[in-house]
Image 1: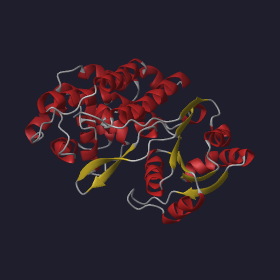
Image 2 (image 1 turned 180 degrees about the vertical axis):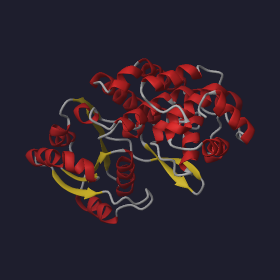
Image 3 (image 1 turned 135 degrees about the vertical axis):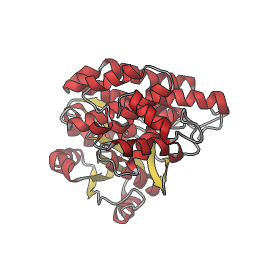
Length: 350
């Protein structure tokens, strides 16, 4: 975390976005100086892209070994993967969704090698950020790990993503609307470090995606590309700020609280609904946020998230306790049940 006087900024060496990126991964890795890599992926990306990626690695002469994500919690890392990486590999290449990328970051950190990000769904800004979000009992905490040395965003792959992941990414970007307001509030009330440049950039990402909501909802290539660029930019802003503050605030705390009840919706969808409610508390344009989610065909209510009203209200009352170190519009004590009920009803979430 920055201390207000100094912090380290680490940025990716390469960001490659466009058509048929997957087919040139081997060539790009070799040009970056990586001659041997461990590839962590999951079943679906392996089935869809495995042959193409393997062909590219073979053609370029990059040595490789595939590892299948074992579905264990983030804290349970692949010992066989780590041993192989430490012995002879230059980098961990994570190919998949948020979970695979997070585990790949942790393995790269533990193995002291570079991390390469190859997202297959545009579900959240972790595709470019140097952070992972981990569970710690009943709370959540963010941990800095490896800044991706390279990000390969293949739009032809990402545009085929299931819509639930697309709107998850959309909701995650929209969340910057309230995250930046929470950050400034903590600065004004508690003297917390505040980076005006990164805050403004993150907020602008949210505003741009609000304007692109219909294209995202229709799943157009232009809309998906804009979303991917916003997610990558937000991830980089976390590295620039030295904190997740520009991209994660009270709306994320609400999502983390909802996760305590095994909520069925992807993280970013919950963040989107949280942003509607937290915008209301900030006396900001909550209706504009809600309308953009509707245009993107994203959830705006408890029912659409697949949870009952009581669970959603309970999550609102627990949200502030998810990260006691992070001051937001929810204050130190959070919302009581009466206030949470009133908030959910006022914003038409229940």
